[in-house]
Amino acid sequence: MIEVKDVYFQYDGIEEEKQFALNGVNMTIKDGEFVAIVGHNGSGKSTLAKHFNSIYLPTTGDVIVDGMNTKDDDWLFEIRKKVGLVLQNPDNQIVAGIVEEDVAFGCENLGVPPQEIRQRVDEALKAVDMYDYRTHSPDKLSGGQKQRVAIAGIIAMEPECIVLDEPTAMLDPQGRQEVISTVRKLNQERGITIILITHYMEEAVLADRVIMMDSGKVLTDGTPREVFAQVEMLKKHRLDVPQATELCYRLKGCGYEVPECVLNEEECAKALIKLLKGSAG
Amino acid sequence: MVRDITLGQFMPGRSLIHRLDARSKIMFLIAYIVFIFVAKNYMALLLVTLASMLVVLMTKIRFSMYLKSMKVILFVVILTGILNIFYGTGNVLWEWGIIKITDGGIHNAIFVTIRIATLVLISSVLTFTTSPSDLTDAMERLMKPLTFFHVKVHEIAMMMTIALRFIPVLLEETDKIMNAQKARGADMESGGIIKRIKALIPVLIPLFVSSFRRANDLAMAMECRCYNGGKGRTRMKQLHFSVIDLLGLIFSLIVFAGVILCNIYFSSVIR
Image 1: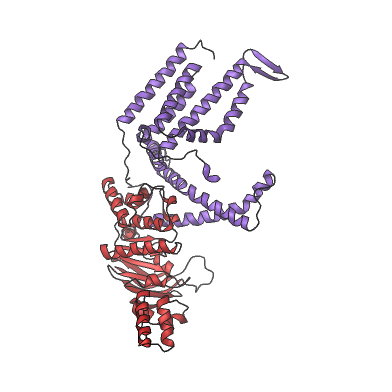
Image 2: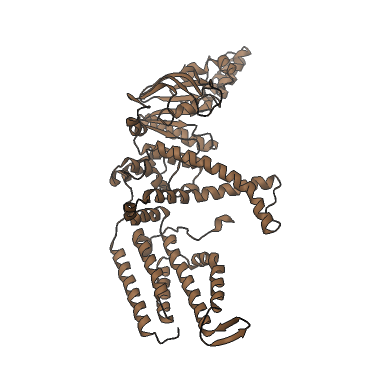
């Protein structure tokens, strides 16, 4: 689906010549995958996100989307149709004053016939559970709801891949939950490729594959279990692991019998129950 | 505080007026404004005012909402009314130095006041019963012939849409920044007008900076959704004329005929 080949990227106007935001990134995203890209501030993850639909172009290297190079102007709209991007601030990406009209915005730009736009909009709003709010004004919605409207606006364009650039960073825990479960549903039920940029490790755990980035480079790439097993290495790069993983890692360090890599609260609870029962009996 | 502005606020509903096509509403509004100024005597003006009141009643929006929007321009109405008292001709009723009040002036004042009040009333009908997006959409279509003169009609309509969308966002932001500055000891409520205006600078600067940031974000979001100007763009909501618009047209024509007749037949009536 998307191939990133040896991409270096430098922002305009940075004084020091050697300051690259991306430092030779290579990765391949397959069709239907749910990939989480994590890293702390300044790791280049957001910069990378904007390369997927040719908002930014690599200084050197190539990004290929379904055989189309993002540098090729002729493919610009094809690429943006295939790869939708949801940004961090839900307020700043809603164009129209009414929910359904905002969702229709992308389709209108593509020149879809009005009848079909109506269908797509209704379907997209149902997919993100916002159909009941279709005639509302966006400023009356919560952050999570706004972000779901933004996602619906992308879905209505029927993309094959949705890139979400820290969609939950400005939301409260409930809004975060809403957005993440919507994204998972889209991936599982519609087979849309999801690239989720986040700094919440708890969200990354839900993905099929986790890519860790640090100072513009890919640090590790693998299933959540593989990646979060390397607690030592992650700590060295000042990267977090999910709390449950951290707890079990420390317990293990103190010599307790817990499984090698625990990813979520449930697994952690099970491990602890087993441990406590074992020590009691 | 800043959020209590009713002038130009949309109130959803299902009345006949709501269901008029936005394009006809704009055209009718223009026609009514013309009627109001064409009316030459009290009878004609009474007719236009009654017609506007009928339209206002038909919107099924509480009259207090209209009064609220009137309140905003009350000052302007009173001021123009008072000024007109002194600019009349005819029998002098009262004189003091160069200031004199004539009966013509008093009629003028009454006339102008009713005119402006009716004007606001009928304009409120448009903004109260039409969603902002329908309004901008209708304007885009009505102004379409101007593209011939290289007027960027689509861009103007898009700017209006975005401006309307961001008014509440920016109002909220203004409130937040004001509170943040107050929390740091900024004093915005005391002092003369100059001092108060100066006190707004620390609010305006952050507001501007964040507006530019928002604009940048929004531009990117629009690009992500393949926005490429008005070319090849379709619309989900199609505007179309219906029987209601025809009824509206007939009604307007009747009012127009009435105004003309009143102008002719009651020309002897005062004014």
